[in-house]
Length: 367
Ligand code: M6R
Image (cartoon, helix red, strand yellow):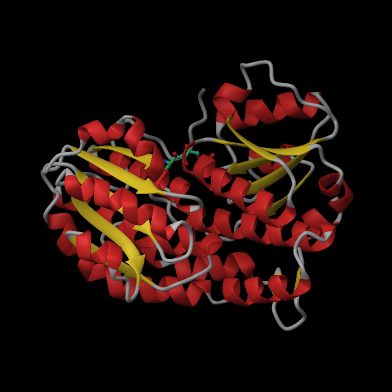
Protein backbone atom coordinates (compact mmCIF):
# COMPACT_ATOMS: atom_id res chain seq x y z
CA UNK A 1 0.00 0.00 0.00
CA UNK A 2 3.05 2.27 0.25
CA UNK A 3 3.39 1.83 -3.49
CA UNK A 4 7.04 0.83 -3.32
CA UNK A 5 8.02 3.76 -1.11
CA UNK A 6 9.68 3.21 2.23
CA UNK A 7 7.22 5.42 4.07
CA UNK A 8 3.77 6.86 3.51
CA UNK A 9 5.24 10.32 3.90
CA UNK A 10 7.56 9.87 0.92
CA UNK A 11 4.74 8.37 -1.13
CA UNK A 12 2.52 11.31 -0.26
CA UNK A 13 5.23 13.84 -1.10
CA UNK A 14 5.54 12.21 -4.51
CA UNK A 15 1.79 12.16 -5.02
CA UNK A 16 1.60 15.94 -5.04
CA UNK A 17 1.57 16.52 -8.80
CA UNK A 18 -1.52 14.32 -8.86
CA UNK A 19 -3.15 15.55 -5.64
CA UNK A 20 -2.85 19.19 -6.65
CA UNK A 21 -4.17 18.32 -10.09
CA UNK A 22 -7.06 16.35 -8.60
CA UNK A 23 -7.90 19.28 -6.33
CA UNK A 24 -8.21 21.57 -9.36
CA UNK A 25 -9.99 19.07 -11.53
CA UNK A 26 -13.54 20.12 -12.47
CA UNK A 27 -12.91 23.47 -10.76
CA UNK A 28 -10.29 25.15 -12.86
CA UNK A 29 -11.73 25.19 -16.37
CA UNK A 30 -8.92 26.79 -18.29
CA UNK A 31 -10.47 26.59 -21.75
CA UNK A 32 -13.59 28.36 -20.59
CA UNK A 33 -11.59 30.77 -18.46
CA UNK A 34 -13.63 30.06 -15.32
CA UNK A 35 -13.27 28.68 -11.84
CA UNK A 36 -16.23 26.57 -10.88
CA UNK A 37 -16.81 26.09 -7.16
CA UNK A 38 -20.40 25.45 -6.22
CA UNK A 39 -19.79 25.97 -2.51
CA UNK A 40 -18.51 29.48 -3.14
CA UNK A 41 -20.88 30.35 -5.94
CA UNK A 42 -24.02 29.37 -4.03
CA UNK A 43 -23.06 31.76 -1.26
CA UNK A 44 -21.08 34.33 -3.17
CA UNK A 45 -23.06 37.25 -1.75
CA UNK A 46 -22.14 36.15 1.80
CA UNK A 47 -18.51 36.35 0.82
CA UNK A 48 -18.90 39.56 -1.13
CA UNK A 49 -20.69 41.33 1.70
CA UNK A 50 -18.59 39.85 4.48
CA UNK A 51 -17.08 42.28 6.96
CA UNK A 52 -14.11 39.98 7.08
CA UNK A 53 -13.10 36.39 6.70
CA UNK A 54 -11.73 34.57 9.72
CA UNK A 55 -9.68 31.48 8.99
CA UNK A 56 -9.51 28.94 11.81
CA UNK A 57 -7.16 25.97 11.92
CA UNK A 58 -4.32 24.22 13.75
CA UNK A 59 -0.80 23.16 12.78
CA UNK A 60 -0.06 22.79 9.10
CA UNK A 61 -3.62 23.77 8.21
CA UNK A 62 -3.05 27.03 10.09
CA UNK A 63 0.03 27.67 7.97
CA UNK A 64 -2.10 27.13 4.87
CA UNK A 65 -4.53 29.63 6.39
CA UNK A 66 -1.80 32.27 6.67
CA UNK A 67 -1.06 31.88 2.98
CA UNK A 68 -4.82 32.06 2.39
CA UNK A 69 -4.78 35.46 4.08
CA UNK A 70 -2.16 36.75 1.67
CA UNK A 71 -4.08 35.31 -1.29
CA UNK A 72 -7.56 36.52 -0.37
CA UNK A 73 -6.43 39.98 0.70
CA UNK A 74 -4.30 40.45 -2.40
CA UNK A 75 -6.73 39.16 -5.00
CA UNK A 76 -10.19 39.63 -3.49
CA UNK A 77 -9.37 42.56 -1.17
CA UNK A 78 -11.51 41.14 1.64
CA UNK A 79 -9.96 41.56 5.11
CA UNK A 80 -8.79 38.24 6.55
CA UNK A 81 -7.74 37.16 10.01
CA UNK A 82 -6.13 33.84 10.74
CA UNK A 83 -6.53 32.28 14.16
CA UNK A 84 -5.36 29.23 16.00
CA UNK A 85 -8.59 27.41 16.81
CA UNK A 86 -7.44 26.78 20.38
CA UNK A 87 -6.91 30.49 21.04
CA UNK A 88 -9.97 31.69 19.18
CA UNK A 89 -12.40 29.52 21.09
CA UNK A 90 -11.30 30.66 24.54
CA UNK A 91 -10.76 34.37 24.07
CA UNK A 92 -14.35 35.54 23.72
CA UNK A 93 -13.84 36.64 20.12
CA UNK A 94 -16.07 39.20 18.40
CA UNK A 95 -18.07 37.36 15.78
CA UNK A 96 -21.14 38.63 13.95
CA UNK A 97 -23.47 37.35 11.28
CA UNK A 98 -21.53 39.49 8.79
CA UNK A 99 -18.43 37.34 9.29
CA UNK A 100 -17.44 34.40 7.17
CA UNK A 101 -15.42 31.74 8.93
CA UNK A 102 -13.29 29.34 6.92
CA UNK A 103 -12.14 26.23 8.77
CA UNK A 104 -9.21 24.32 7.34
CA UNK A 105 -8.67 20.74 8.49
CA UNK A 106 -7.18 17.74 6.77
CA UNK A 107 -8.85 15.22 9.08
CA UNK A 108 -12.01 17.22 9.69
CA UNK A 109 -11.86 15.90 13.25
CA UNK A 110 -9.59 18.32 15.10
CA UNK A 111 -11.27 19.02 18.44
CA UNK A 112 -10.23 22.65 18.82
CA UNK A 113 -11.21 23.53 15.26
CA UNK A 114 -14.56 21.84 15.74
CA UNK A 115 -15.24 23.71 18.99
CA UNK A 116 -14.23 27.04 17.45
CA UNK A 117 -16.67 26.43 14.61
CA UNK A 118 -19.51 25.63 16.95
CA UNK A 119 -18.90 28.92 18.69
CA UNK A 120 -18.80 30.86 15.41
CA UNK A 121 -21.96 29.15 14.27
CA UNK A 122 -23.80 30.07 17.47
CA UNK A 123 -22.90 33.70 16.83
CA UNK A 124 -24.39 33.55 13.36
CA UNK A 125 -21.29 33.49 11.18
CA UNK A 126 -21.40 31.70 7.85
CA UNK A 127 -19.09 28.70 8.02
CA UNK A 128 -17.10 27.28 5.16
CA UNK A 129 -14.99 24.14 5.39
CA UNK A 130 -11.84 23.05 3.62
CA UNK A 131 -11.44 19.41 4.61
CA UNK A 132 -9.76 16.42 3.10
CA UNK A 133 -11.78 13.67 4.75
CA UNK A 134 -15.21 13.37 3.19
CA UNK A 135 -18.12 13.47 5.62
CA UNK A 136 -15.86 14.23 8.58
CA UNK A 137 -17.29 16.06 11.60
CA UNK A 138 -16.09 19.48 10.44
CA UNK A 139 -17.31 18.88 6.91
CA UNK A 140 -20.72 18.08 8.35
CA UNK A 141 -21.04 21.08 10.67
CA UNK A 142 -20.12 23.66 8.02
CA UNK A 143 -22.70 25.52 5.89
CA UNK A 144 -20.75 24.87 2.71
CA UNK A 145 -17.26 23.91 1.68
CA UNK A 146 -14.76 22.51 -0.78
CA UNK A 147 -13.01 19.22 -0.28
CA UNK A 148 -9.33 18.96 -1.02
CA UNK A 149 -9.11 15.92 -3.22
CA UNK A 150 -5.69 14.91 -1.96
CA UNK A 151 -6.70 11.33 -1.19
CA UNK A 152 -6.05 9.66 2.17
CA UNK A 153 -3.06 11.08 4.00
CA UNK A 154 -1.54 8.46 6.32
CA UNK A 155 1.78 10.01 7.37
CA UNK A 156 1.32 12.07 10.51
CA UNK A 157 3.30 14.88 8.92
CA UNK A 158 0.96 16.63 6.55
CA UNK A 159 2.35 17.10 3.04
CA UNK A 160 -0.05 16.59 0.16
CA UNK A 161 -2.99 17.85 2.21
CA UNK A 162 -1.11 21.13 2.72
CA UNK A 163 -0.48 21.76 -0.97
CA UNK A 164 -4.08 20.77 -1.73
CA UNK A 165 -5.30 23.29 0.87
CA UNK A 166 -3.19 25.97 -0.81
CA UNK A 167 -4.72 25.02 -4.15
CA UNK A 168 -8.25 25.46 -2.81
CA UNK A 169 -7.41 28.76 -1.13
CA UNK A 170 -5.90 30.00 -4.40
CA UNK A 171 -9.02 29.04 -6.32
CA UNK A 172 -11.22 30.76 -3.72
CA UNK A 173 -9.15 33.96 -3.81
CA UNK A 174 -9.20 34.12 -7.62
CA UNK A 175 -12.89 33.25 -7.81
CA UNK A 176 -13.89 35.92 -5.30
CA UNK A 177 -11.53 38.50 -6.81
CA UNK A 178 -12.91 37.91 -10.28
CA UNK A 179 -16.47 38.16 -9.00
CA UNK A 180 -16.05 41.32 -6.98
CA UNK A 181 -14.04 43.05 -9.66
CA UNK A 182 -10.72 43.27 -7.85
CA UNK A 183 -9.05 40.84 -10.21
CA UNK A 184 -9.21 41.97 -13.83
CA UNK A 185 -9.82 39.49 -16.58
CA UNK A 186 -6.37 39.60 -18.14
CA UNK A 187 -4.62 38.99 -14.83
CA UNK A 188 -7.15 36.33 -13.89
CA UNK A 189 -6.50 34.50 -17.15
CA UNK A 190 -2.77 34.57 -16.79
CA UNK A 191 -2.93 33.47 -13.13
CA UNK A 192 -5.17 30.50 -13.84
CA UNK A 193 -2.95 29.43 -16.73
CA UNK A 194 -0.03 29.47 -14.33
CA UNK A 195 -1.96 27.59 -11.67
CA UNK A 196 -2.81 24.95 -14.22
CA UNK A 197 0.93 24.42 -14.80
CA UNK A 198 1.77 23.97 -11.10
CA UNK A 199 1.44 20.14 -11.03
CA UNK A 200 4.10 19.99 -13.79
CA UNK A 201 6.36 22.27 -11.80
CA UNK A 202 5.95 20.10 -8.70
CA UNK A 203 6.88 17.10 -10.82
CA UNK A 204 9.97 18.89 -12.03
CA UNK A 205 10.97 19.85 -8.48
CA UNK A 206 10.56 16.27 -7.30
CA UNK A 207 12.83 15.09 -10.09
CA UNK A 208 15.49 17.72 -9.65
CA UNK A 209 15.65 17.91 -5.85
CA UNK A 210 15.11 14.34 -4.66
CA UNK A 211 18.75 13.28 -4.74
CA UNK A 212 20.00 16.71 -3.80
CA UNK A 213 17.93 16.92 -0.62
CA UNK A 214 19.20 13.48 0.41
CA UNK A 215 22.77 14.69 0.05
CA UNK A 216 22.10 17.86 1.97
CA UNK A 217 20.28 15.91 4.69
CA UNK A 218 23.38 13.79 5.33
CA UNK A 219 25.28 16.87 6.45
CA UNK A 220 22.67 17.83 9.04
CA UNK A 221 21.93 14.57 10.80
CA UNK A 222 23.64 15.86 13.94
CA UNK A 223 22.15 19.35 13.87
CA UNK A 224 20.33 20.47 17.00
CA UNK A 225 18.72 23.64 15.68
CA UNK A 226 17.46 25.06 12.40
CA UNK A 227 16.08 28.40 11.33
CA UNK A 228 13.73 28.75 8.35
CA UNK A 229 13.26 32.18 6.84
CA UNK A 230 11.05 33.62 4.13
CA UNK A 231 9.18 36.79 3.32
CA UNK A 232 5.70 37.47 1.99
CA UNK A 233 3.95 34.32 0.84
CA UNK A 234 7.02 32.35 1.78
CA UNK A 235 7.01 33.38 5.41
CA UNK A 236 4.27 30.84 6.21
CA UNK A 237 6.15 28.39 3.97
CA UNK A 238 9.13 28.87 6.31
CA UNK A 239 6.91 28.12 9.33
CA UNK A 240 5.70 24.97 7.62
CA UNK A 241 9.23 23.87 6.67
CA UNK A 242 10.27 24.23 10.32
CA UNK A 243 7.23 22.32 11.59
CA UNK A 244 7.94 19.44 9.21
CA UNK A 245 11.50 19.15 10.45
CA UNK A 246 10.71 19.35 14.15
CA UNK A 247 7.83 16.93 14.19
CA UNK A 248 9.56 14.10 12.39
CA UNK A 249 13.28 14.57 13.13
CA UNK A 250 12.95 16.02 16.67
CA UNK A 251 15.44 18.73 15.76
CA UNK A 252 14.43 22.09 17.14
CA UNK A 253 13.46 24.38 14.27
CA UNK A 254 11.89 27.79 14.05
CA UNK A 255 10.35 29.60 11.15
CA UNK A 256 10.54 33.37 10.99
CA UNK A 257 9.75 36.20 8.62
CA UNK A 258 13.26 36.97 7.35
CA UNK A 259 13.12 40.61 8.38
CA UNK A 260 12.23 39.71 11.97
CA UNK A 261 15.58 38.03 12.31
CA UNK A 262 17.26 41.20 13.44
CA UNK A 263 14.76 41.56 16.25
CA UNK A 264 16.12 38.57 18.11
CA UNK A 265 16.94 35.32 16.33
CA UNK A 266 20.04 36.80 14.71
CA UNK A 267 21.68 36.36 18.10
CA UNK A 268 21.55 32.60 17.53
CA UNK A 269 23.52 32.66 14.30
CA UNK A 270 27.01 31.24 14.27
CA UNK A 271 28.86 28.69 12.15
CA UNK A 272 26.79 25.89 13.68
CA UNK A 273 23.38 27.25 12.77
CA UNK A 274 21.78 25.90 9.61
CA UNK A 275 19.41 28.40 8.03
CA UNK A 276 17.00 27.53 5.27
CA UNK A 277 16.12 30.56 3.20
CA UNK A 278 13.28 30.63 0.72
CA UNK A 279 14.29 33.23 -1.83
CA UNK A 280 12.56 32.98 -5.20
CA UNK A 281 13.01 35.84 -7.68
CA UNK A 282 9.47 37.14 -7.41
CA UNK A 283 8.65 38.51 -4.00
CA UNK A 284 10.98 40.79 -2.03
CA UNK A 285 14.10 39.27 -3.54
CA UNK A 286 16.33 42.29 -2.93
CA UNK A 287 15.25 42.41 0.69
CA UNK A 288 16.04 38.74 1.13
CA UNK A 289 19.48 39.30 -0.41
CA UNK A 290 20.33 41.71 2.35
CA UNK A 291 19.01 39.29 5.00
CA UNK A 292 21.27 36.62 3.54
CA UNK A 293 24.23 38.98 3.68
CA UNK A 294 23.59 39.50 7.38
CA UNK A 295 23.57 35.74 7.94
CA UNK A 296 26.68 35.24 5.84
CA UNK A 297 28.54 37.82 7.87
CA UNK A 298 27.82 35.70 10.96
CA UNK A 299 28.90 32.49 9.23
CA UNK A 300 25.50 30.74 9.35
CA UNK A 301 25.21 27.64 7.14
CA UNK A 302 22.89 28.70 4.36
CA UNK A 303 20.59 26.34 2.52
CA UNK A 304 18.90 28.47 -0.12
CA UNK A 305 15.78 27.67 -2.09
CA UNK A 306 16.06 29.84 -5.19
CA UNK A 307 14.91 30.00 -8.77
CA UNK A 308 16.90 28.43 -11.52
CA UNK A 309 19.72 30.66 -12.69
CA UNK A 310 19.82 32.63 -9.44
CA UNK A 311 23.16 34.31 -8.75
CA UNK A 312 23.10 36.69 -5.80
CA UNK A 313 21.74 34.43 -3.07
CA UNK A 314 23.31 31.30 -4.54
CA UNK A 315 26.80 32.80 -4.39
CA UNK A 316 26.45 33.26 -0.64
CA UNK A 317 24.77 29.92 0.05
CA UNK A 318 26.45 26.71 1.20
CA UNK A 319 23.72 24.61 -0.43
CA UNK A 320 21.48 25.64 -3.31
CA UNK A 321 18.11 24.09 -4.11
CA UNK A 322 16.68 25.32 -7.39
CA UNK A 323 12.96 25.50 -8.11
CA UNK A 324 11.22 26.76 -11.26
CA UNK A 325 9.96 30.34 -11.39
CA UNK A 326 6.30 31.07 -10.61
CA UNK A 327 4.24 34.03 -9.51
CA UNK A 328 4.86 34.79 -5.89
CA UNK A 329 1.44 33.51 -4.85
CA UNK A 330 2.24 29.99 -6.09
CA UNK A 331 5.77 29.81 -4.77
CA UNK A 332 4.87 28.29 -1.37
CA UNK A 333 3.41 25.27 -3.18
CA UNK A 334 6.57 24.71 -5.18
CA UNK A 335 9.03 25.68 -2.45
CA UNK A 336 7.43 23.41 0.15
CA UNK A 337 8.25 20.27 -1.80
CA UNK A 338 12.05 20.27 -1.32
CA UNK A 339 11.56 21.31 2.31
CA UNK A 340 9.34 18.27 2.86
CA UNK A 341 12.01 16.08 1.28
CA UNK A 342 14.76 17.65 3.34
CA UNK A 343 12.86 17.09 6.60
CA UNK A 344 12.01 13.57 5.52
CA UNK A 345 15.59 12.55 4.78
CA UNK A 346 17.05 14.18 7.87
CA UNK A 347 14.53 12.23 9.94
CA UNK A 348 15.21 8.98 8.07
CA UNK A 349 18.98 9.32 8.55
CA UNK A 350 18.41 9.92 12.24
CA UNK A 351 16.49 6.67 12.40
CA UNK A 352 13.21 8.33 13.37
CA UNK A 353 9.81 6.83 12.76
CA UNK A 354 8.71 9.37 10.17
CA UNK A 355 5.19 8.11 9.60
CA UNK A 356 4.39 7.98 13.29
CA UNK A 357 6.49 10.43 15.20
CA UNK A 358 6.54 10.14 18.98
CA UNK A 359 3.78 11.87 20.94
CA UNK A 360 1.78 12.78 17.84
CA UNK A 361 -1.49 11.55 16.38
CA UNK A 362 -2.86 11.98 12.88
CA UNK A 363 -6.05 13.56 14.12
CA UNK A 364 -6.01 15.46 17.35
CA UNK A 365 -9.46 14.72 18.71
CA UNK A 366 -8.75 15.97 22.21
CA UNK A 367 -8.14 19.59 23.03
O1 M6R B 1 -6.46 17.48 10.51
P1 M6R B 1 -6.06 18.90 10.73
O2 M6R B 1 -5.65 19.57 9.46
O3 M6R B 1 -7.12 19.68 11.45
O4 M6R B 1 -4.81 18.82 11.67
C1 M6R B 1 -4.20 19.97 12.17
C2 M6R B 1 -2.86 19.64 12.78
O5 M6R B 1 -3.02 18.73 13.87
C3 M6R B 1 -1.90 19.05 11.77
O6 M6R B 1 -1.73 19.86 10.66
C4 M6R B 1 -0.51 18.79 12.41
O7 M6R B 1 0.10 19.99 12.74
C5 M6R B 1 0.34 17.94 11.46
N1 M6R B 1 0.96 16.86 12.18
C6 M6R B 1 1.40 18.74 10.77
O8 M6R B 1 2.17 17.98 9.93
